[in-house]
View 1 (cartoon, rainbow, N blue to C red):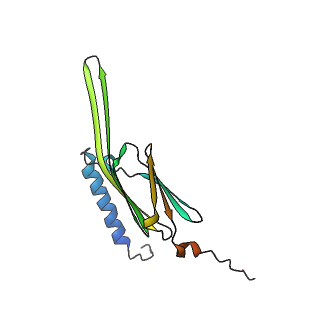
View 2 (tube, helix red, strand yellow):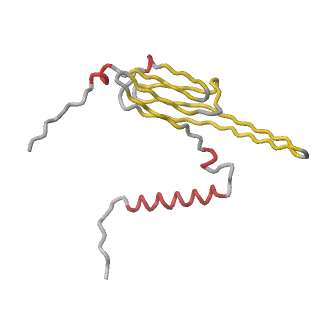
Length: 150
């Protein structure tokens, strides 16, 4: 008796992706310096929409202002940087020193068009805040209430 299954044109691609994920997981398992979890330093981002502005906040602990770059386009914001962290512990008979460095980049798509030339950014205590004024076309966009008929 054969089972009938709905035809899925992407079934083969899904299976291929699963196999590739499994293969990469096995490869990186024994190489801690290359492990994706170690190198993935993607900053957490909050995006808030107000009447006239979009506010973006990013947590960037361990990043210096000199190693931070922000680029704004009408439809996206890119944050690039380099972070470094050092820890040293001296006890009787031993010295333990740890260093971690890495680069990161994150691009966030804006929900509406913004004015890149009027963007303002502040960076204080590891928190990057960017205020992005909306374009005039985005400000004029208002939701339209549609009457519901029975």
